[in-house]
Image (cartoon, rainbow, N blue to C red):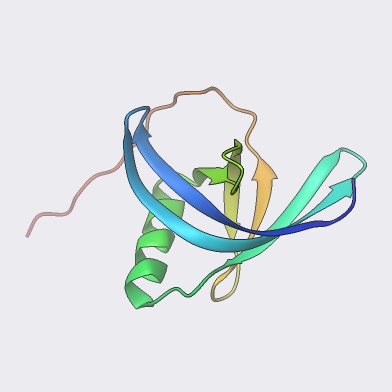
Length: 105
């Protein structure tokens, strides 16, 4: 496999029927000995998108990486500086609980 560069989207799902967010990204995927390595950055993100993306990454960093041909794979997003991030293949269970508490004033 050669280096793969593309515009894609990262989707964050609350459950199998409810997509809470979809973020446009540019990714570069390269082959490595044990599979692949991915890096990318948010495409055309404003402050609201950056803030929402950061919140979802902290809540649960597992997203669905979707490609233009309709294919997709589960990935774990590792936030970097600014709009940058790295990706690894998610190999955990298909469903998992997310713990989140809201602060009341």
